[in-house]
Length: 263
Length: 305
Picture 1: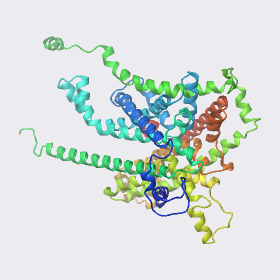
Picture 2: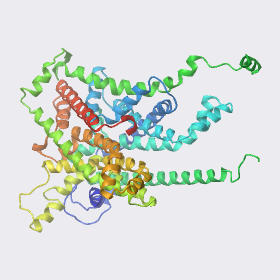
Picture 3: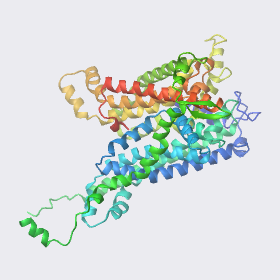
Picture 4: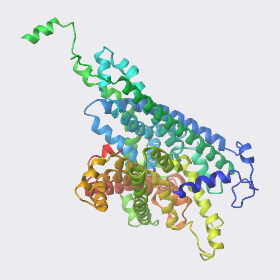
């Protein structure tokens, strides 16, 4: 288990190393916050980071909007297309990134679409939809569909049932799906490397810089991403626990202690 | 007849039309399914088409149904693509087997030996490396394991290794990196499968006089097979196609098919070669995973993801 920490600790430690050059060095030269204070000094790094952020936010948002209805269809209906759609979702997750990247580039070349920000976005949504479908469908299957039937019996139409009943209940699932999609998008190197054109995302920048030695600011960005990710994960976990606790207490309050049937 | 009367007495309620009742799942999955079809499935097929084109980077490529490309690449080729394939498969197999051996005890420990309140923190610990960008954490390993890095200089000072000992550039470094980067993909599915096992079955096995080893081998292990399968699927496929670990942690002798595809596409712009290699890779992985699913009889693939 200790092995897990090695790259993390080294990254954090060397983001504070007072290195004499603008590349990370093996020797420890003392503590400094210089690299954090000059975070945006490296040519192209900040821009790459912002591009990654933009792509991650947009692609996760689009894939949640587009993927949730697919999850609803798979989770709530039996229909002819179920098998094929399940198979595509499965293949989308299992397919090796290198093949998907190469194939996407082949495709974009053959339809004469110039590679760049747009193609990155399209491809990221294409792999993120599958993750969204899986996460939201899992949330749906953990939810009693009788509640939706009850809403319909009480006269709600499909849209009202969705917005007033289903959506509030699967909301944590949508959030989890968004976060997973965000993480997948922001960290993707292999697929993006094929279809980025001249656009540089954060992982592409780091990969290019790794060949000649990383600027210490990359480690600062890495440390900050690590901390933000950790905080979000912990907050999400706490939120789920809180909801779970609330749901169980409400259930026990609502549960009749005496038989309701009049005797 | 009585139903007729009841129907007549009902306020006007019309059964929705056949189309209204059966169309919702289709329009719900229209955009999402269409997106995956257009930008995932069709590209996979278009890779095959591109591989059959001939031409060069300058004047462009045209489709000539050049099936010979496949024999050219693997039978008489200046570049040993077959070697790259075999090497990548070796890295994939080694990484997968070692990952199972490391991940299973971890998953078992979290599922069976830890109280409920410690489960989430331990799972978070397993996932902790994912919070560091993939390329950064791989490069940090190359930083730690480099000749002037911490590990080798310490080993030298302790006179444990000869002066020309090195870790980077070896197959073991690549496999180590692959294991480190993929371990959570093995731990999580196995953990989920173990967690799903009904504890009463284990009690029943013990009541029927099986000892600890028998309970594990004949009850727990078979019941966690689906988890192992999902882990193998994720880890093996990712590792065989990965260009990052072999390029950042490896050297000349660790060139993999992932790097070959990337280089022929992006550096040499041999679109047909790259597309042919990736098509072959996909087919090989498909056959291996299909055979594995057949042999180990995993029931329902959809339930795994």
